[in-house]
View 1: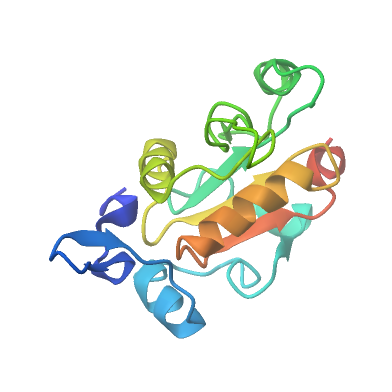
View 2 (view 1 turned 60 degrees about the vertical axis):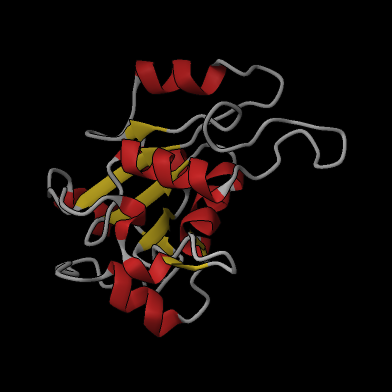
Amino acid sequence: HGEPFCAAPALRHKGTRGRPIFRPLLDRSEASANCGRGAAMEIASIGTSALVSVAELAPLLGDESLLVIDCRFVLNEVDAGRDAYLEAHIPGARYAHLESELSGPPNSDCGRHPLPSPNHLCKLFGYLGIAPGIRVVVYDDSYGMVAARLWWMLRYMGHATVAVLDGGWQSWT
């Protein structure tokens, strides 16, 4: 897929001791310049809208610059989302698990699913295949609860070309 997720220099800067440290991108123009390089934007709403429809997504499945991520998860049945993914998912979709991948280690001060560290997110996003120029669509079956979390995490880390599937898994089936 090209450049690894956090290899882009805009995501790092020198800390007070001269070591590179994480700096989230907060400026939309900077995020677009960093993550949109070379990406053909056939789905105009990815990166400009938080939602993408099934009608927009379906014809682009199989495009190498598009990555679909299934985030289905059930809070009281931690394996249910992965099981549902293994049973059926949008063609080509990868799976991201709320507890083991989209959360940091729980502790009493940060709740049940605290945000993972930026370093963990860089590794996870690279593992999933997210890189500059890759458009991402995320979905779940919980009215966007987990998909919106991953959407926000990607945006926070500077990846602007991400959208949530409008209506989630239910709209696909």
